Image 1 (tube, rainbow, N blue to C red):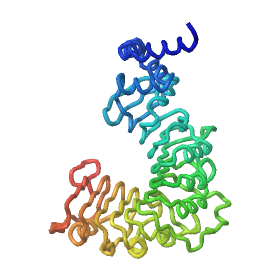
Image 2 (image 1 turned 180 degrees about the horizontal axis):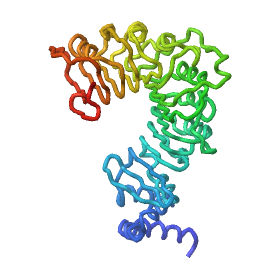
Image 3 (image 1 turned 30 degrees about the vertical axis):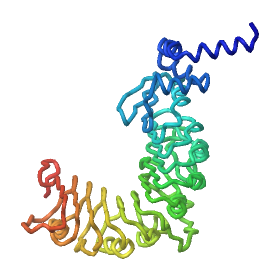
Length: 370
């Protein structure tokens, strides 16, 4: 028999649906993935007759002994070896649109052409990997980085391990989040440059920016530049003049279209802070204070366009403040969690615009108001 005749015979054998099904069923899951990538015919057969499951949203948790892959749409969980993960990606990479990675080193993104959202949690990250992410995933719209380290096991730093140039290469990015902790120094100029140059709709920066000595002698080089893209912003920060070249008024004036702000102020907030929010963020509809301390606040009503307000782990607010918020402002939603109020409680009518109220100080013994 000639080689050509042998090839035709081989094709006829593997065109037999029942035979191929039998061969696949003899194999364990990981070996099925490997067998499916032998040829385009095997791949199509596997996806059509063996496994029709799609993996659009997955959570990949890489542990020393194995890897777990959770399909967020069906809640089914796979347990694979680390090599098995690579074979899985060869089969399902085109399906994956949203991925959360936990632990270990980052997955090679070369095959993830349809990825629109990725979250890295407690992993080893490098700027080189993020550069490859920008190159390989042109549709990426969301990037979250939580508690990640560089190769030296140090918390990654903005401007060093993660550069603004790399973020700018992600041209379709709409949401960016960096949550890394409070135990390291970071260049505030890197943060300023990122905030003004990165044209996304949402940013969440939970790294505490302590100025490096060289920052104290620098002023922002962006002058009167503003960011018209940013609509939602979540930041922990200080706005003391000794901290960086922006005070709170200058900072907020950079974001003219801001509609939602979550802020944890390390400085004490007074009426001037509230007035600054009202004057600089005239489109603001949602405002959330976290771990902030207030002093002698006379009014919140200057925030006229506000529809949603919340306090989490805040101090220094009075029952008079609460009365004004609930009865005189045109809010639709109000929440107060782990926040105490001083003074005497009063009875009053609630604003008819309010649709949702949550105040745990009224029913939590541990956080009962003074």
